[in-house]
Image 1: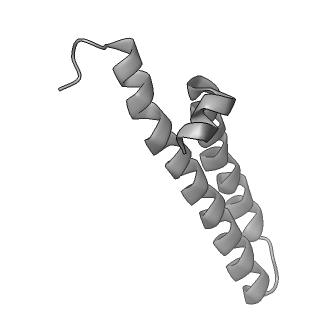
Image 2 (image 1 turned 45 degrees about the vertical axis):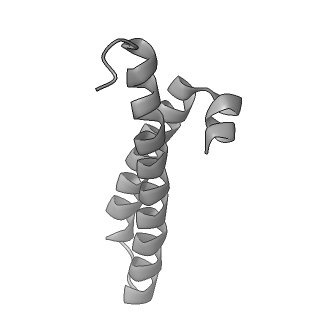
Length: 75
């Protein structure tokens, strides 16, 4: 993950994580209009997977951002 953070950048990775958490909300809203329970299930599963990826991006980039912003207060 360190290579990804170095290649993309901390702030960009954090913003991508926020987007990956926001976009599945739209998918969940649109999934309620499906007539088939299978479509609803798979759209919900896909949306939750995107949300998990976004959570991982945020959880990996936010501590790095905090430590670089406040290097004297690492504890």
